Length: 384
Image (cartoon, rainbow, N blue to C red):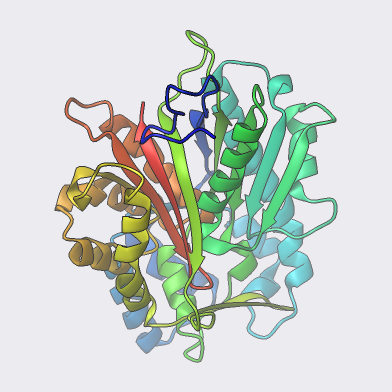
């Protein structure tokens, strides 16, 4: 029986190589409406007919603390004019929210996938698997089928849907796509994530303080990547190789991030202990992934981390003793797009691939995300 060396290839006494999945292309897309953080407070309170000065002061403070400068949103004046009940407390609006969210999510997904396919440079008919991730739509058939038809994918494309995983969904999708690519030589996997905050938009209420965090932090958008384990020389241009992938939940933390669907949309509660839970468990999780390489120091890795918020990034940096530049791509993505749930790790990856082109860039790195559970998702990656 052959053994794996640190590069993920079998030792020379075996004639068969273990080919790791590679990221071949990346695309992203956003709705047309741009939300500048400096104008959010006035706009949000006006749209929700709220004049509470305490609410205003709290939202202003949150907007400054998030470090977000710009976001994109599906929500618009036209939507609120058509559905004024969305800004009315206690009104059953799930049907209306899904009328908006379902097509919007697929529209963004199609745009991101289109950008990804254009970068890849091969026809959509050569995609053999589709992994579709969203916490923002709900219907049968799902957005995966609508997207496949929109893109002109072949009718026998293998489809996998991952719904309502929250912020770690992008890395879960990457793990599933990695398995598909590695177990189906010659196959090409299109992974698409798409999210909108329409499903949780509501007027502020002091009994739901996390609603204000959501208003100050979250945005809308989509992302897409294509994976394959056997890149075609001169045609495909892989930039990242995916090695070990691990998912882990932290026992007795299932209530730290709590999301519930109701007739008024989805409601979230976020426990203050989330940064602490991550801080207490992240070192062991990362060292487990690092053990597959010869790397011993955290600062000898590149870091592609979902930026759930500045507090999480600060705790991660402090706990692991990371140099400030290690999380630059994560902080930049948070500043430019906000927290866009499952998509955001790919916005970080897009910035990171530019960093990895620089002389002296690290060979090995980690792709990380955290979400409900509390769940950790991690992938050991290597620069190509």
